[in-house]
Length: 343
Ligand code: SAM
Image 1 (cartoon, rainbow, N blue to C red):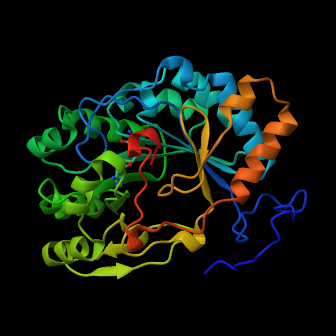
Image 2: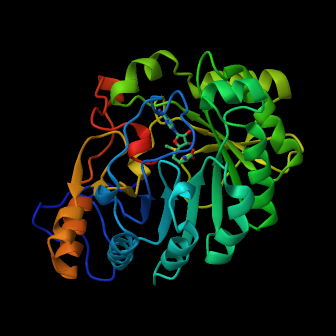
């Protein structure tokens, strides 16, 4: 459990040099940067097929993203994860990655991707300074894959995973959202990957968002059910300790080089340890994945606000980070779907 420190609202979030804390004393060290709301797949649980994308002039430019990453790093953020939409469909993704990797204070640069473009991009991204990669892959069955993604080709992702490994992006993590009626029977095959690969395969509970919430709630599969299926097929899961904070509860199958993780955002929230904020593609700082609370940084940026003013806005917004989500009380974020936030 993180220590909870209550502060007066006018008290600075942290002493200079100590990094940034929110109103509950949680250190904010982790920024997820959505590079676009566009995607080259349409996963059924993530976005509707006929989704409308933001006009391009509403999306942050490379230079604007760089300013906000610098500000975040100055405030104590050490870890950046590039996401989307699909980050690899952003033009100049390699050049932008290289610029972000060079920002002083950023120690860890990772990406969450569907893997479709990694065959050609894994090597240049690694050379640009990307350290690690999470590839979203919900099934190893070709038909199921197509049904979930609406038109995706499984081989693109499998080749992408191989390319990521060859490029030295380590550890390779595979993230699967478990969706009833689509892939709940695919979890054992995914878990089996850890018997031959040193990968971290993680199963994520589906979360509800706005217009897709009805489907998401009905097709939700709790982690304990997924664990039961895996143990029934492959034997007992042994819990293992991981160094550092990880939202996944981590296990290993007997003799496996890889690990299995369960990210139970709905059934076992980990809000007490959350030190994460998210920057949407159009420049809003989202303070909790599952709350609609956001701060607009693009408007002041484009209105010519000074660097110091942007930094103070960033710090003040992060300070307001809500304690946690309210799913258990039926509070569902309404304003955005997952592809408009970034996972
Ligand atoms: N396009 C990239 C990808 O596929 O990884 C990055 C963006 S995607 C929104 C990030 C992650 O969010 C993916 O692993 C995706 O499966 C997951 N995701 C999407 N909708 C979700 C939901 N309703 N609940 C939980 N995870 C979700």
